[in-house]
Length: 268
Image (tube, rainbow, N blue to C red):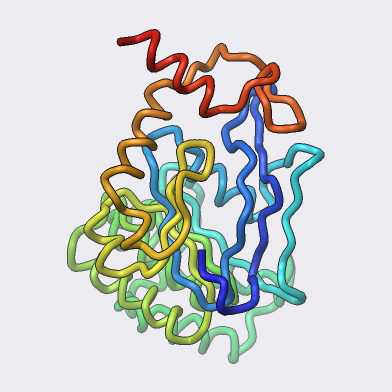
């Protein structure tokens, strides 16, 4: 992981469990301020769980701890599948929700706030869509709307969960340009992605997960055949009925790699 800059957010033994079985297992490290990091891994590797944990949306195990840089403002973009598109909301109000910290539930949209919304919509090429209901938007238009909301939030740490999923290539290129702009502005961006070619081209840092941290650092050093094969093997060998995780990071006294080797041996 990048150690040259101060940490925006630090993970200490991060473990998140569902019914005492870990979705994330003892992940430690930090995202440096101004870093641009892709989070990759097989399905079920804990990628979305990681972002929700960083956003403060999930309870952590008692021995886990997150440290944020003082005064850090955070913005989180969930997967589109988690959004209720039937809610009667137009594009303008969806973007305006990015200013919730300033308006509250009953606050008034000032001319300055409206100007920020207009500028954000222009940045994502959605001017003229202000009164369109979000439920009528295409996947690409909705994602551009959500990126406009991120723009008005003006956060220093931006968390993106599969931001280019089900989005056309032209929209993806425009949104990637915004991500690069945030990076050049010194913001910290963490994005869950599935396209390794995209990661190699646009993301200098990568965290490879398979519930545990497989590798974390410069993308060229993380995206190796050995690391990717190990992540796949760990995902394939995972047993949802395995022993409960204890607070010291062991499964009934055995470390994860030992159990992995035993399960792989049993299937060959």
